[in-house]
Picture (spheres, rainbow, N blue to C red):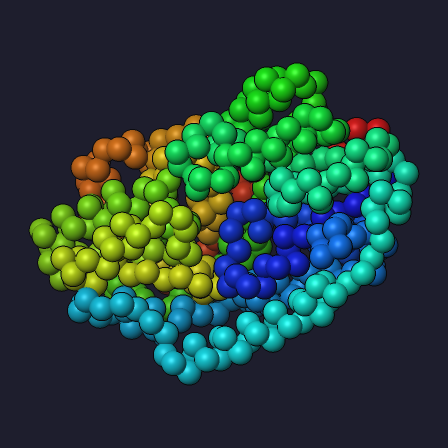
Length: 429
């Protein structure tokens, strides 16, 4: 089975210190197909259009990304950044920033990684995929990008023998366009149009996404497309025990992780914390907001740094994966009050890490978490207040090692996941 794997998105991700859910799945599959015995071809979006590279010609981007994202270190030692530990110990209000020396080192390291990526991928020449793709190959894109660009995918119309398979992470941009930036619903519709016209199969993370995808494809006259439904595994670092960090032993804090945008419902949490501060003052627990700033986030950022919160809400963007894992280990709980998700990777990571979870009562969270999380209506702020207050009074059971896993939850096995993925691709022939 010949596979053409699209690395267009991954080749640019060294710019991000922390991967999102799409990045993680894309990296997992890229590493599977581009390393070892798989011998997949690689496809790359370039200045001259898409270019194809034979097995082993284009470097696998995943090892560099593991270093950039901080996913390579095991066994894991405490790596919560000093500036974040200081913020968690500090009751005064003020923006949280790393030291100037740390910022300079970070910028220099990022510049070196960007230069390396440009040398490896930006200047790569390659061949036209319409002419060079193996006969009957599967073209696999796990990231959505850049399927919306006609220039990148036009070659598929020339090669009817090639079998396109797309990972569709969610249908939300076309189902709830008001939750996304202005251009995304139209771009996502173009991806679905392409899948309906040329697709040989699709992969999704949940039955919720599968149901939405079937409906969208049916409206496009394509109701026979094979769909593989499988919850993805989390990065191994979340399934491994982690040494506890004594600097955080006496601090009560919660974590919310995800892009800072209206869909994630941060504003409701900030109202919870405003009330906690009003009632408890300096005894209120902290809330660490992990994630980059997204679209329409101005009101959210302003509320996050409101002096009325007295520094109890801390913005922590750019955390590496190992730093986030260390922080998560001693949190009172992970909070996920999002209005809508296709999957919910932060929830899966917290469950695998043995961290309590309080999440919005939406279908994708129910499918992922089963009976384990505490489910709450994302519109009922007082219920979240009560749950946070109750959870903050329960001490975390950490002594020497924070053990991974939580009773009743079985994380997805990565080897089984990729094996089932291969079986699905094989079934398309």
